Image 1 (cartoon, rainbow, N blue to C red):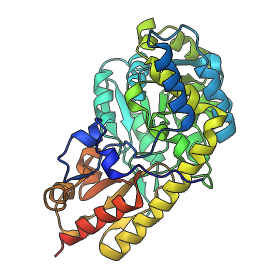
Image 2: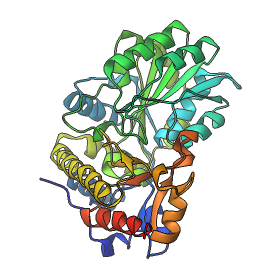
Image 3: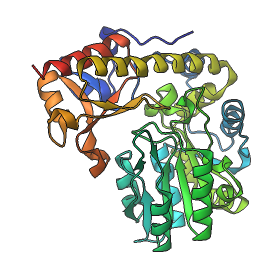
Length: 382
Protein backbone atom coordinates (compact mmCIF):
# COMPACT_ATOMS: atom_id res chain seq x y z
CA UNK A 1 0.00 0.00 0.00
CA UNK A 2 1.39 3.38 -1.04
CA UNK A 3 2.19 6.01 1.57
CA UNK A 4 0.37 9.27 0.89
CA UNK A 5 1.74 12.70 1.73
CA UNK A 6 -0.13 14.86 4.23
CA UNK A 7 -2.27 17.76 2.92
CA UNK A 8 -0.47 21.07 2.45
CA UNK A 9 -2.53 22.85 5.09
CA UNK A 10 -1.49 20.22 7.62
CA UNK A 11 2.16 20.32 6.58
CA UNK A 12 2.28 24.06 7.11
CA UNK A 13 1.59 23.45 10.80
CA UNK A 14 4.97 21.75 11.12
CA UNK A 15 7.74 23.78 12.76
CA UNK A 16 10.78 22.10 11.17
CA UNK A 17 13.27 23.83 8.88
CA UNK A 18 11.42 22.86 5.72
CA UNK A 19 8.28 24.68 6.79
CA UNK A 20 9.75 27.66 8.64
CA UNK A 21 12.59 28.86 6.40
CA UNK A 22 10.37 30.57 3.80
CA UNK A 23 7.02 32.43 3.73
CA UNK A 24 3.82 30.49 3.12
CA UNK A 25 3.63 31.45 -0.56
CA UNK A 26 6.79 29.40 -1.21
CA UNK A 27 6.69 25.67 -1.94
CA UNK A 28 9.65 24.26 0.05
CA UNK A 29 11.42 21.48 -1.85
CA UNK A 30 14.97 22.12 -0.72
CA UNK A 31 15.97 20.41 2.55
CA UNK A 32 15.81 16.60 2.81
CA UNK A 33 12.64 16.25 4.84
CA UNK A 34 9.60 14.36 3.58
CA UNK A 35 5.91 15.17 3.77
CA UNK A 36 4.61 11.76 4.82
CA UNK A 37 3.10 10.70 8.13
CA UNK A 38 5.29 8.71 10.48
CA UNK A 39 5.41 4.96 10.06
CA UNK A 40 2.77 3.56 12.46
CA UNK A 41 5.28 1.53 14.49
CA UNK A 42 7.44 4.61 14.96
CA UNK A 43 4.48 6.72 16.04
CA UNK A 44 3.41 4.06 18.54
CA UNK A 45 6.90 3.83 20.02
CA UNK A 46 7.11 7.59 20.51
CA UNK A 47 3.58 7.85 21.91
CA UNK A 48 4.35 5.07 24.39
CA UNK A 49 7.54 6.82 25.49
CA UNK A 50 5.65 10.08 26.04
CA UNK A 51 3.03 8.34 28.15
CA UNK A 52 5.78 6.77 30.28
CA UNK A 53 7.86 9.92 30.46
CA UNK A 54 10.68 7.83 28.98
CA UNK A 55 12.82 10.86 28.18
CA UNK A 56 16.07 10.25 30.04
CA UNK A 57 19.54 9.34 28.84
CA UNK A 58 19.99 6.40 26.50
CA UNK A 59 20.99 3.17 28.23
CA UNK A 60 24.53 1.82 28.02
CA UNK A 61 23.16 -1.26 26.21
CA UNK A 62 20.29 -1.02 23.75
CA UNK A 63 18.73 -3.33 21.12
CA UNK A 64 19.47 -0.86 18.31
CA UNK A 65 22.54 -2.67 16.90
CA UNK A 66 20.65 -5.97 16.74
CA UNK A 67 17.65 -4.22 15.17
CA UNK A 68 19.83 -2.69 12.46
CA UNK A 69 21.70 -5.95 11.80
CA UNK A 70 18.39 -7.76 11.26
CA UNK A 71 17.11 -4.92 9.03
CA UNK A 72 20.27 -5.01 6.92
CA UNK A 73 19.90 -8.77 6.48
CA UNK A 74 16.27 -8.49 5.38
CA UNK A 75 16.76 -5.51 3.07
CA UNK A 76 20.33 -5.90 1.76
CA UNK A 77 21.29 -9.54 2.42
CA UNK A 78 24.06 -8.34 4.74
CA UNK A 79 24.41 -9.18 8.42
CA UNK A 80 26.80 -6.75 10.09
CA UNK A 81 28.16 -7.68 13.52
CA UNK A 82 26.05 -5.93 16.17
CA UNK A 83 29.06 -6.00 18.51
CA UNK A 84 30.88 -3.72 16.07
CA UNK A 85 28.42 -0.82 16.24
CA UNK A 86 28.06 2.29 18.36
CA UNK A 87 25.44 5.02 18.24
CA UNK A 88 25.75 8.80 18.14
CA UNK A 89 23.55 11.79 17.38
CA UNK A 90 23.56 11.75 13.58
CA UNK A 91 25.49 10.62 10.53
CA UNK A 92 27.41 13.89 10.26
CA UNK A 93 28.67 13.59 13.83
CA UNK A 94 29.63 9.97 13.25
CA UNK A 95 31.63 10.96 10.17
CA UNK A 96 33.55 13.63 12.06
CA UNK A 97 34.33 11.37 15.02
CA UNK A 98 35.62 8.63 12.73
CA UNK A 99 37.68 10.93 10.52
CA UNK A 100 39.32 12.49 13.57
CA UNK A 101 40.66 9.07 14.48
CA UNK A 102 41.89 7.91 11.08
CA UNK A 103 43.60 11.06 9.79
CA UNK A 104 46.08 13.50 11.25
CA UNK A 105 45.41 17.26 11.11
CA UNK A 106 46.06 18.59 7.62
CA UNK A 107 45.79 15.24 5.86
CA UNK A 108 43.61 15.01 2.77
CA UNK A 109 40.20 13.34 2.53
CA UNK A 110 38.70 12.49 -0.86
CA UNK A 111 35.12 13.51 -1.65
CA UNK A 112 33.25 12.97 -4.92
CA UNK A 113 31.39 16.08 -6.04
CA UNK A 114 28.72 17.00 -6.73
CA UNK A 115 28.13 15.85 -3.18
CA UNK A 116 26.14 16.65 -0.03
CA UNK A 117 27.39 20.15 0.91
CA UNK A 118 28.21 19.42 4.60
CA UNK A 119 30.85 16.90 3.47
CA UNK A 120 33.23 19.77 2.82
CA UNK A 121 32.64 21.20 6.29
CA UNK A 122 32.79 17.83 8.04
CA UNK A 123 36.25 17.12 6.61
CA UNK A 124 37.45 20.50 7.86
CA UNK A 125 35.81 19.99 11.26
CA UNK A 126 37.74 16.72 11.57
CA UNK A 127 40.98 18.58 10.83
CA UNK A 128 41.33 17.35 7.26
CA UNK A 129 41.70 19.00 3.88
CA UNK A 130 39.20 18.25 1.11
CA UNK A 131 40.54 16.47 -1.98
CA UNK A 132 37.97 16.71 -4.79
CA UNK A 133 37.67 13.75 -7.16
CA UNK A 134 34.41 14.39 -9.04
CA UNK A 135 32.06 11.66 -10.15
CA UNK A 136 32.47 10.65 -13.78
CA UNK A 137 29.51 11.49 -15.99
CA UNK A 138 29.32 8.73 -18.59
CA UNK A 139 26.50 10.45 -20.44
CA UNK A 140 23.94 8.02 -19.08
CA UNK A 141 25.00 7.68 -15.46
CA UNK A 142 27.42 8.84 -12.80
CA UNK A 143 30.15 6.63 -11.38
CA UNK A 144 33.19 6.81 -9.16
CA UNK A 145 36.35 7.99 -10.91
CA UNK A 146 38.54 5.15 -9.67
CA UNK A 147 41.57 6.36 -11.62
CA UNK A 148 41.24 9.79 -10.04
CA UNK A 149 40.84 8.27 -6.59
CA UNK A 150 43.88 6.07 -7.15
CA UNK A 151 45.95 9.10 -8.13
CA UNK A 152 44.81 11.05 -5.06
CA UNK A 153 45.61 8.15 -2.75
CA UNK A 154 49.00 7.65 -4.39
CA UNK A 155 49.79 11.32 -3.77
CA UNK A 156 49.02 11.01 -0.06
CA UNK A 157 45.27 11.30 0.60
CA UNK A 158 44.52 9.29 3.74
CA UNK A 159 40.78 8.72 3.61
CA UNK A 160 37.74 8.61 1.32
CA UNK A 161 34.42 10.02 2.47
CA UNK A 162 31.99 8.04 0.35
CA UNK A 163 28.28 8.70 -0.22
CA UNK A 164 26.52 5.38 -0.96
CA UNK A 165 23.88 5.89 -2.35
CA UNK A 166 25.11 9.23 -3.62
CA UNK A 167 23.49 12.54 -2.72
CA UNK A 168 22.45 14.46 -4.86
CA UNK A 169 22.52 12.18 -7.92
CA UNK A 170 20.77 9.17 -6.38
CA UNK A 171 23.52 6.92 -7.77
CA UNK A 172 23.81 3.43 -6.29
CA UNK A 173 27.45 2.44 -6.64
CA UNK A 174 28.02 -1.06 -8.00
CA UNK A 175 29.51 -3.83 -5.89
CA UNK A 176 32.42 -3.99 -8.33
CA UNK A 177 33.19 -0.28 -7.98
CA UNK A 178 33.00 -0.45 -4.20
CA UNK A 179 35.31 -3.46 -4.08
CA UNK A 180 37.77 -1.69 -6.38
CA UNK A 181 37.65 1.39 -4.15
CA UNK A 182 38.32 -0.75 -1.08
CA UNK A 183 41.28 -2.44 -2.75
CA UNK A 184 42.76 0.94 -3.64
CA UNK A 185 42.34 2.11 -0.04
CA UNK A 186 44.00 -1.05 1.26
CA UNK A 187 46.87 -0.70 -1.20
CA UNK A 188 47.57 2.83 0.02
CA UNK A 189 46.84 2.32 3.72
CA UNK A 190 43.79 4.60 3.63
CA UNK A 191 40.37 4.42 5.29
CA UNK A 192 36.91 4.64 3.73
CA UNK A 193 34.02 6.15 5.70
CA UNK A 194 30.76 5.39 3.89
CA UNK A 195 27.65 7.50 4.53
CA UNK A 196 24.74 5.12 3.84
CA UNK A 197 21.89 7.21 5.21
CA UNK A 198 19.91 6.84 1.95
CA UNK A 199 20.39 3.07 1.72
CA UNK A 200 16.87 2.13 2.96
CA UNK A 201 15.50 4.21 0.05
CA UNK A 202 17.11 2.24 -2.80
CA UNK A 203 14.40 1.19 -5.22
CA UNK A 204 13.62 -2.49 -4.80
CA UNK A 205 14.67 -3.59 -8.31
CA UNK A 206 18.05 -1.89 -7.96
CA UNK A 207 20.84 -4.02 -6.44
CA UNK A 208 22.40 -2.30 -3.42
CA UNK A 209 25.67 -3.31 -1.80
CA UNK A 210 26.68 -1.81 1.54
CA UNK A 211 30.32 -0.78 1.34
CA UNK A 212 31.38 -3.15 4.12
CA UNK A 213 29.72 -6.04 2.27
CA UNK A 214 31.53 -5.42 -1.02
CA UNK A 215 34.52 -7.67 -0.22
CA UNK A 216 37.28 -8.57 2.20
CA UNK A 217 39.19 -5.37 1.51
CA UNK A 218 36.20 -3.20 2.44
CA UNK A 219 35.84 -4.93 5.78
CA UNK A 220 39.50 -4.19 6.48
CA UNK A 221 39.52 -0.51 5.48
CA UNK A 222 36.00 0.67 6.10
CA UNK A 223 33.43 2.14 8.40
CA UNK A 224 29.78 2.73 7.58
CA UNK A 225 27.52 5.32 9.20
CA UNK A 226 23.79 4.60 8.97
CA UNK A 227 20.50 6.00 10.23
CA UNK A 228 16.74 5.61 9.87
CA UNK A 229 16.41 9.37 9.67
CA UNK A 230 16.10 9.92 5.91
CA UNK A 231 13.74 7.05 5.12
CA UNK A 232 11.52 7.58 8.16
CA UNK A 233 11.88 11.40 8.47
CA UNK A 234 13.46 11.30 11.93
CA UNK A 235 16.31 13.80 11.54
CA UNK A 236 15.21 15.93 14.48
CA UNK A 237 15.29 12.98 16.88
CA UNK A 238 19.07 12.44 16.59
CA UNK A 239 20.23 8.85 16.22
CA UNK A 240 22.77 7.15 13.96
CA UNK A 241 24.99 4.08 14.07
CA UNK A 242 28.70 3.82 13.30
CA UNK A 243 29.53 0.34 12.00
CA UNK A 244 33.03 -1.14 11.86
CA UNK A 245 34.05 -3.87 9.45
CA UNK A 246 37.04 -5.30 11.33
CA UNK A 247 38.04 -6.15 14.88
CA UNK A 248 40.64 -3.39 14.74
CA UNK A 249 38.10 -0.79 13.73
CA UNK A 250 35.64 -2.10 16.29
CA UNK A 251 38.28 -1.43 18.94
CA UNK A 252 38.49 2.15 17.67
CA UNK A 253 34.73 2.51 18.11
CA UNK A 254 34.91 1.16 21.66
CA UNK A 255 37.66 3.67 22.45
CA UNK A 256 35.46 6.65 21.55
CA UNK A 257 34.49 8.81 24.54
CA UNK A 258 31.21 7.79 26.15
CA UNK A 259 29.86 11.27 25.40
CA UNK A 260 29.88 10.44 21.68
CA UNK A 261 27.29 7.75 22.35
CA UNK A 262 25.37 9.77 24.95
CA UNK A 263 24.66 12.39 22.30
CA UNK A 264 22.20 9.90 20.82
CA UNK A 265 18.65 11.13 21.39
CA UNK A 266 16.45 8.84 23.46
CA UNK A 267 13.48 9.45 21.15
CA UNK A 268 15.76 8.93 18.14
CA UNK A 269 16.89 5.60 19.55
CA UNK A 270 13.36 4.38 20.24
CA UNK A 271 12.14 5.57 16.84
CA UNK A 272 15.05 3.90 15.02
CA UNK A 273 14.45 0.57 16.75
CA UNK A 274 10.82 0.70 15.62
CA UNK A 275 11.80 1.79 12.10
CA UNK A 276 14.24 -1.08 11.68
CA UNK A 277 11.74 -3.63 13.04
CA UNK A 278 10.01 -6.06 10.63
CA UNK A 279 6.64 -4.43 11.31
CA UNK A 280 7.85 -1.27 9.52
CA UNK A 281 8.85 -3.09 6.33
CA UNK A 282 5.39 -2.83 4.79
CA UNK A 283 5.33 0.94 5.36
CA UNK A 284 8.81 1.32 3.86
CA UNK A 285 7.81 -0.73 0.82
CA UNK A 286 4.79 1.54 0.39
CA UNK A 287 6.99 4.60 0.62
CA UNK A 288 9.26 3.21 -2.10
CA UNK A 289 6.26 2.68 -4.36
CA UNK A 290 5.21 6.29 -3.82
CA UNK A 291 8.70 7.61 -4.50
CA UNK A 292 8.94 5.50 -7.65
CA UNK A 293 5.75 7.08 -8.94
CA UNK A 294 6.95 10.54 -7.93
CA UNK A 295 10.33 10.25 -9.66
CA UNK A 296 8.56 9.17 -12.86
CA UNK A 297 5.98 11.94 -12.55
CA UNK A 298 8.76 14.50 -12.18
CA UNK A 299 10.40 13.23 -15.36
CA UNK A 300 7.13 13.49 -17.29
CA UNK A 301 6.44 17.00 -16.02
CA UNK A 302 9.92 18.22 -16.89
CA UNK A 303 9.67 16.74 -20.39
CA UNK A 304 6.34 18.48 -20.91
CA UNK A 305 7.01 21.87 -19.32
CA UNK A 306 10.80 22.27 -19.24
CA UNK A 307 12.19 20.24 -22.13
CA UNK A 308 15.58 21.98 -21.78
CA UNK A 309 16.06 20.34 -18.37
CA UNK A 310 18.34 17.31 -18.12
CA UNK A 311 17.10 14.80 -15.55
CA UNK A 312 18.07 11.23 -14.77
CA UNK A 313 15.78 9.31 -12.47
CA UNK A 314 17.62 8.56 -9.23
CA UNK A 315 17.90 4.92 -8.19
CA UNK A 316 17.62 5.84 -4.51
CA UNK A 317 16.13 8.50 -2.30
CA UNK A 318 13.74 11.35 -3.00
CA UNK A 319 16.18 13.95 -4.28
CA UNK A 320 16.38 14.80 -7.99
CA UNK A 321 19.51 16.35 -9.51
CA UNK A 322 18.37 18.51 -12.43
CA UNK A 323 20.56 20.34 -14.93
CA UNK A 324 18.85 23.61 -15.92
CA UNK A 325 21.85 25.15 -17.68
CA UNK A 326 19.97 24.98 -20.97
CA UNK A 327 17.52 27.58 -19.70
CA UNK A 328 20.24 30.21 -19.42
CA UNK A 329 19.37 31.12 -15.84
CA UNK A 330 22.96 31.34 -14.65
CA UNK A 331 25.15 29.28 -12.36
CA UNK A 332 22.56 29.18 -9.59
CA UNK A 333 19.10 28.92 -11.20
CA UNK A 334 17.47 28.16 -7.85
CA UNK A 335 17.82 31.84 -6.93
CA UNK A 336 15.65 32.96 -9.83
CA UNK A 337 13.22 30.10 -9.25
CA UNK A 338 12.79 31.14 -5.62
CA UNK A 339 12.36 34.80 -6.50
CA UNK A 340 10.01 34.45 -9.46
CA UNK A 341 8.30 31.06 -9.05
CA UNK A 342 8.18 30.92 -5.24
CA UNK A 343 9.64 27.42 -5.25
CA UNK A 344 12.58 26.72 -2.93
CA UNK A 345 15.08 24.24 -4.36
CA UNK A 346 18.58 23.45 -3.09
CA UNK A 347 21.27 25.59 -4.72
CA UNK A 348 23.30 23.47 -7.15
CA UNK A 349 26.68 25.22 -6.63
CA UNK A 350 26.54 24.31 -2.92
CA UNK A 351 27.35 20.73 -4.00
CA UNK A 352 30.57 21.81 -5.70
CA UNK A 353 31.62 23.47 -8.94
CA UNK A 354 29.95 20.58 -10.79
CA UNK A 355 26.62 21.90 -9.53
CA UNK A 356 26.68 25.08 -11.58
CA UNK A 357 23.45 25.36 -13.52
CA UNK A 358 21.83 22.61 -11.41
CA UNK A 359 19.17 22.39 -8.72
CA UNK A 360 18.24 19.65 -6.26
CA UNK A 361 14.50 19.02 -6.13
CA UNK A 362 12.91 17.12 -3.22
CA UNK A 363 10.10 14.95 -4.58
CA UNK A 364 9.30 13.34 -1.22
CA UNK A 365 5.90 14.99 -1.25
CA UNK A 366 2.52 14.77 -2.98
CA UNK A 367 2.00 14.58 -6.75
CA UNK A 368 0.01 17.81 -6.48
CA UNK A 369 2.91 19.74 -4.97
CA UNK A 370 5.38 18.31 -7.50
CA UNK A 371 3.06 19.30 -10.35
CA UNK A 372 2.46 22.79 -8.97
CA UNK A 373 6.19 23.35 -8.47
CA UNK A 374 7.14 22.38 -12.03
CA UNK A 375 4.28 24.42 -13.50
CA UNK A 376 5.34 27.47 -11.47
CA UNK A 377 8.93 27.13 -12.68
CA UNK A 378 7.79 26.72 -16.28
CA UNK A 379 5.81 29.99 -16.09
CA UNK A 380 9.07 31.90 -15.60
CA UNK A 381 9.86 31.15 -19.23
CA UNK A 382 6.84 33.23 -20.24
